[in-house]
Image 1 (cartoon, rainbow over the protein chains, first blue to last red):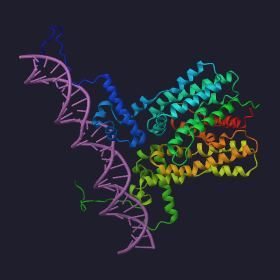
Image 2 (cartoon, chains in turn orange, blue, red, cyan; image 1 turned 120 degrees about the horizontal axis):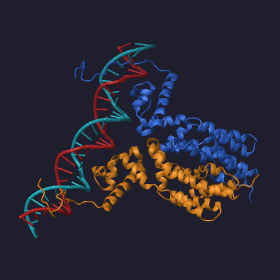
Image 3 (cartoon, each protein chain N blue to C red; image 1 turned 90 degrees about the vertical axis):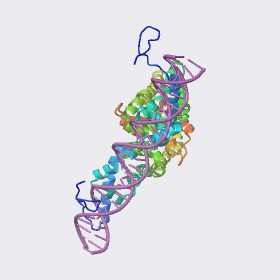
Image 4 (cartoon, each protein chain N blue to C red; image 1 turned 45 degrees about the horizontal axis):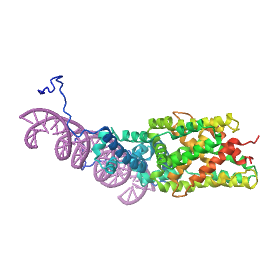
Amino acid sequence: MARPATKGKAARPVRARAAPALTPEEREARTKGMLDAAMDVFLERGFGAAKLDEVAARAGVAKGTLYLYFASKEALFEELIRSLLASPFQAAGEAMLKQDVPAETMLRGLIAFAKTEILGTRRKDIARLIISEAGRFPDLAAFYHREVVSRGMNAVRAIVERGVARGEFTSDAAARFPQLAVAPLLVAIVWTGIFDRVQKLDTDGFLDAHADLLIRGLKGDKS
Amino acid sequence: MARPATKGKAARPVRARAAPALTPEEREARTKGMLDAAMDVFLERGFGAAKLDEVAARAGVAKGTLYLYFASKEALFEELIRSLLASPFQAAGEAMLKQDVPAETMLRGLIAFAKTEILGTRRKDIARLIISEAGRFPDLAAFYHREVVSRGMNAVRAIVERGVARGEFTSDAAARFPQLAVAPLLVAIVWTGIFDRVQKLDTDGFLDAHADLLIRGLKGDKS
DNA sequence: CGTTAATGACTGACCAGTCAGTCATACTCT
DNA sequence: AGAGTATGACTGACTGGTCAGTCATTAACG
């Protein structure tokens, strides 16, 4: 018990640190490795059917190690979702609002953005996963709504409102229900995940057609 | 261990019910009772988390009885889905095509139909369940596509094509991608199932707005 | 009686979560 | 430098609970 008071001063029982203490960077890197493995498995099987043994195997660690980094399977799942969220919509929308371009251009830009940034990435899989598991994770659904959905809706609403204010659009339907502008994106996400084997959907042409029809509807100078 | 030991095992107080030959009607009625119970449980918990013990309890039978009517949990689930499918869309679409009314009226009628016959019934829950579980039941997804989705798409396509042929519509976007007309319905289904606690969606106003915008877009006499 | 329908205790597999033990490292004292 | 020692990251066999599916048994009928 007697600790040799080195340095004469504060005879503080210094707990000698003597192990491959992980640097924050190392720890983060390992966490990321496990989250990557978890993403593969959860996307492939869904939460319920995903096995932590498999996550561990793919991450190249033992199952016990997972529990040194995450409190439970549920915590791992939630952290995975959180780590993958980003709200590109809002950022893109705000960036566009700063420019002085027609609202039509903004809307088309937003749809093009969704094509590459959501449909073209794993974000679409995350969305599908959340749709599937939201029932069992209400908190996560609320989180996703707050962080992603509501922001996207706000971006669309802002653009459409400006279009109406400037007289470019004659319908405010998409301002009252921004979901209308995003609905086909959801269809594309769900469809490709479920029916693609049966009947392929040309998501690119689909979203182009949506953009055209949407703009026509919003402008529609029909009296 | 103080059990009236009857030969090691003991199947005891059994309150068995009728035993004699079941008429086809009786058999069907019992099947339906179990399917009803199964629907409650599967909708509430999803396939993975649904317990057959609970299904049996709600149906008022023993678990073993389930296996006299269904080969497995999976078979029960599939039969449940099959028993609930109907393709109101196609029938409604065909009925409308027989009348001589404007395509706009048909489309609006179809959307109103979806409101009452899908959003207003448990069919919306079935759709949500299929979206959630399709990954684990590709056959079921294909079946659902064949029996419901493709028929709905055909109905929409037929109506829009007629509208175009008659000069009522100037855009064929919804004929090339009938999903465009149905997308907000899917959003309404998914939204009410996931985000309603966070932010209610006025599905009625939403679909009305969709109908207006869609018609404007299809007619759009903008050059 | 034999047949049919139903039962529910039981089994076996599966899997989330645990924990006693290993090992590589680094610190301290001589 | 080397011996001794502390430490913490990591491991994987194990536990405990859960649940789909089984089957010996019971009851009701003809």
